[in-house]
Length: 149
Image (cartoon, rainbow, N blue to C red; front, side, top):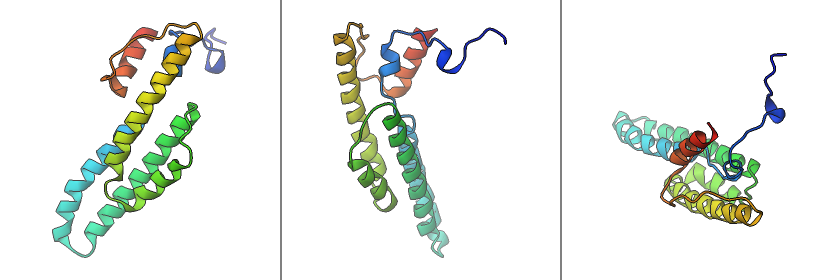
């Protein structure tokens, strides 16, 4: 044994708040795939033979898969979407503007949940760090990594 503690035995350190903050790991990928699908769709339509339909099916399949993974990851962090998670997943297959709507809706839900968790952590005796609400997930992850090291 090399003396390093791994897995559940390892002390994560940090301030306690960083472990309780809700993060949506695939939220930005959902929007990126949707944005990449638009030029692919426009370029594939002149080719004909149903290529536009194929592009739409493939992008919607990926969007639905990443959306499902994102919701599952947030549920593992203790956030309950309720029954609407089934609507988001089902709508991702058929409706064209689900990805940007999910991006905006999940941002609001994550911000509200993080605020609730921050208040709960502060009321339990911890001191949650104050940060501006305009900080997105990527910047927050960088700030958390800087605090941990």
